[in-house]
Length: 284
Ligand SMILES: NC(=O)c1ccc[n+]([C@@H]2O[C@H](COP(=O)([O-])OP(=O)(O)OC[C@H]3O[C@@H](n4cnc5c(N)ncnc54)[C@H](OP(=O)(O)O)[C@@H]3O)[C@@H](O)[C@H]2O)c1
Image (tube, rainbow, N blue to C red; front, side, top):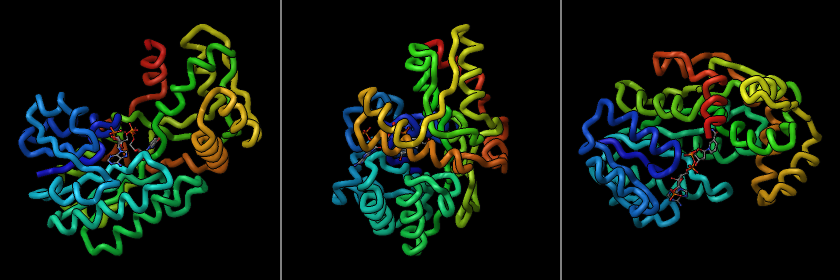
């Protein structure tokens, strides 16, 4: 039995879809905070169980009978270490034989502020004594395509990444990699640095959007504090603006770059090209 936490999230749903290609639905558990959001998964025959990272009592029963567990990192930044520790403890109690964890690219050396909770979770996994495998995911290309509508409206994509090279991949690529790791033998102890085959600067990203949309879009680099202020001005909560601007500043230092091509090796095909993800986003 394979358990996937966060299975109603965007990545989680794609992981379940990828698993269903080779694993019978009756051997997959979607462990979710809100079971009502997983009715479509239940209809496919996937077992849906409640598992709220913030309610440890829900976790052990959600993981019962599981051989392997994919811990998809929580989206509740700032609460993540405690939540992930609760998941690891419950997995141990439930007798899980392998945990896979979605961490951050080069979490051990990353300049991104987001890396701290991932580093601490990796340390908690190591301290748990449970066999584990780490999927250090790079940036989703979709993080940038989400900015296409405002970029088209203003003729400019804002950021603080300077000319840092970004090796992002589509969410679906990372999901397929997670499914591959969950269904292969001998994964314990592995650390995968996962990133896209394509690398680009935000200037090149803006040029791609301009070329495909036929509308003028340039990249405008801002100091980190100004980018954060612009994001707050656009209506984002302060903490999200802080995370995004810090991550862009980290990208300027190479924090979102990797050329190991481990992701394409794991999924057995090239990662989804930037062009294709931009085209999808422009279709709306
Ligand atoms: N690599 C990247 O570029 C990148 C970008 C963004 C995020 N991330 C990380 O990768 C994770 C997966 O990405 P995503 O795109 O799938 O994010 P997402 O769509 O926001 O999904 C986050 C998932 O976490 C679940 N969750 C949050 N708090 C929980 C709790 N207390 N108990 C149980 N589940 C909880 C959510 O449950 P609900 O469905 O109930 O809300 C949701 O299923 C994120 O959570 C974040 O840690 C990575």
